[in-house]
Image (cartoon, rainbow, N blue to C red; front, side, top):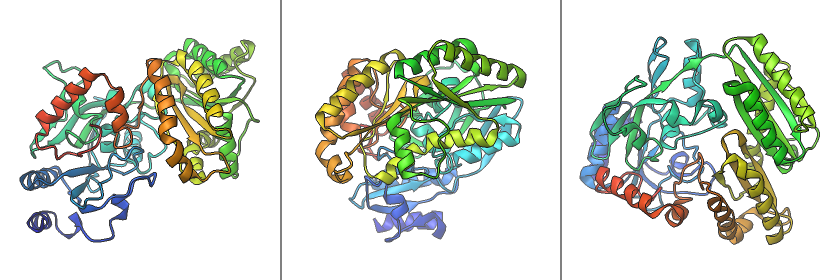
Length: 467
């Protein structure tokens, strides 16, 4: 290993190779569930340096764990405890390579923080719509490697739908330059889609060309109280009929979610009183602010008339709108403060969600009295974060150790039975690897393994994750 480390140091310099005991930021995952021990942390500053690192590791048979902002929730970018895996951090690759206003596209390196990409687009008078709670620290490369979703998938799609082209270093250290700004390119297999969502198991994304959109002239935000999840689904259908593509956000939060925020983060104002379900909805219009306001007001009036909504609060300015979104995005933080919990990032047909939630709430209450279901997420695209918190008289760590496997089995069985997915936007990583092996279609799994073998014959790219 010393020969490899010496070669890495010679190429990357002092700032480009970290060694020793002070690597905790790279060795521990955001949820503090996985703690590893890295051989070293390589921090290349350009694509050619990434390729050089990969070629060296390939020659020495050393596994590589690619890492962006290390904000993942499934243990996909944390080394194991062997001390034999090299963490390859893209954190120094932060260059904004190009903004093409006429083509409505932007090319940025993988280490650019998502908020920086959003700001660069805004500086050019355009919108990069990918948005999630970790946007101040997650990176573009990580977003693509995990096919991140977030709060505006309903209108703009996941990271996959926003990507036009990629630059990738392969498992053998070659550089594929697929940074195309084209929206049409029908010349064979779509290699871009192969690497997006692959969680660093096939190659390392070093840069990407992304779609941009017009900045909205008006953005309108409201919180609405619903008596049931069926009422929230009915409100979604009504909003789609009346607003069409102007509907850019539709989030749902159950009573327990906002009650947890009130307990853990009491400084955050909650504009509405307690409700079984609270919906956060947002409309955006790039054409006419007056038209957008008319549609929004008409939608809420119709929702009250149809019995979908019992009460509502409309943000009167940008500051209030940000406060509404901050309330929604603070649920994961409140959960983290309350202690370890059992997370589920599931997707279902929207029509199946009320029945799923009713069944699982009842089954879990019977399974362990006092259990708290913190249920929130992106109802507009069928993605729920159906998380389970320990009863208040049970230590979170003990709860996780004793009940995680049984609760996962019940939840995932119900999801699969209804045609859903066990991972909507967080990925598989280490956390759900065995669940994927047990529940994914066998033919699909075999094809995935064949692709992995073809592109990474030595099995050095993020081993033990996803597959």
